Amino acid sequence: MRAITFKETGGPEVLHLADLPTPTPGPGELLIRVAYAGVNYGEVQHRLGDFGSPTGDTVTGLEAAGHVAELGEGVTGVSVGDRVTAYLPDGGGYAEYAVVPAAFAFPLPDTVDLRTGGGAALVLTTAYGVLAGAARIARGDTVLIHAAAGGVGGAAAQLARALGASAVYGTASTPQKAAYARDTFGYDDVHVRETFPESILAATAGRGVDIVLDPIGGPTRLASLDVLAPFGRIAVYGEAARHPDLTLPILPLWKNNRTLTGYNIGDLSRRTPETLRHHALSALSLAASGDVRIDITEEYELGEAAEAHRLLGEGRNRGKVVLRVAGE
Ligand SMILES: NC(=O)c1ccc[n+]([C@@H]2O[C@H](COP(=O)([O-])OP(=O)(O)OC[C@H]3O[C@@H](n4cnc5c(N)ncnc54)[C@H](OP(=O)(O)O)[C@@H]3O)[C@@H](O)[C@H]2O)c1
Image (cartoon, rainbow, N blue to C red; front, side, top):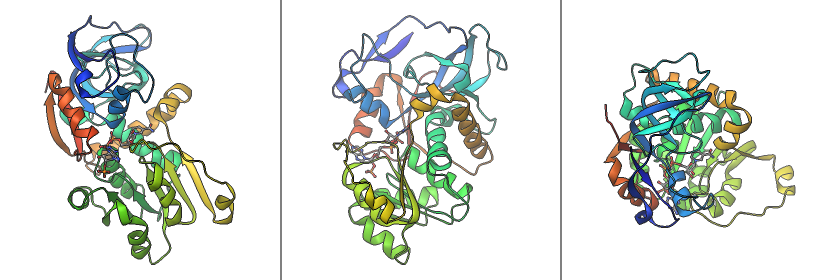
């Protein structure tokens, strides 16, 4: 089968189209014939070596949609030919066929096409898990979402609203991205990140917000502490800016009624797969009803994966980017 692989970490040029054996599903797994694969910032970080070095031909790709091609031993409740969207904890999405634990292959609702499904499983599950699991969103909460125009950010804005948020704000690196996010995902307002503490405090009459979703890190994370309302939570779920980790004193959490919380889908997949599946199915049902829409802005052929990585790595992406593999 055709697959995009890398053997060494580095820039987008380390990604190559290769011919690999089609994988075989083991017990509890299924094989998907990939129609579309999502392109995620985590895959850029994988390629850069942020999650360790590759061993041999490595196929990245954390989400994909397609048809079930083969069932591994003991898999029930799904049939060959079914349309699914899948979270791939071990990667493998940038390929014609991908193996996935059956627990992480979710039925694709009839109202969602395979192209949208290709960019759905990771972002919807993450956005739902960050809001409901890590940040414990409650009806009436106000929410601030960094990287508001991106894949997870755009989904999170709509999910926050569906889960009862009374106001949803965002930040983006440029005014153009801020305008796109505001117009596309229904934010109350999206601010340029550089000056967000002032603008968020002004927008909330000095109160701040109940929840901050932070996949950026560094100075953005530090400044986010200052826009938390009493009992506010910062949910940390990424390091897009690739700054060194922060070391923070704990006492100011106590003195200011602040909470830091974290979300990691890989950890959930190992320790509580049923929670991950619950988050995925809950978010997908909101996508099925139209309450959450994934905005696919760019589509590349499988062989153009390096171009897609250039777009994300340089922060030029908006909405969701997908690779076309077999297509619809
Ligand atoms: N913890 C988990 O389980 C989990 C799961 C999925 C995703 N994530 C994280 O969620 C975040 C969003 O993922 P995504 O795939 O949806 O990506 P995305 O938001 O579509 O794209 C990444 C965004 O990060 C921002 N960014 C900030 N600093 C950057 C830099 N130095 N270089 C490039 N981009 C930078 C850019 O937005 P601006 O232009 O607005 O700055 C960029 O558009 C990522 O940090 C990812 O690692 C975490």
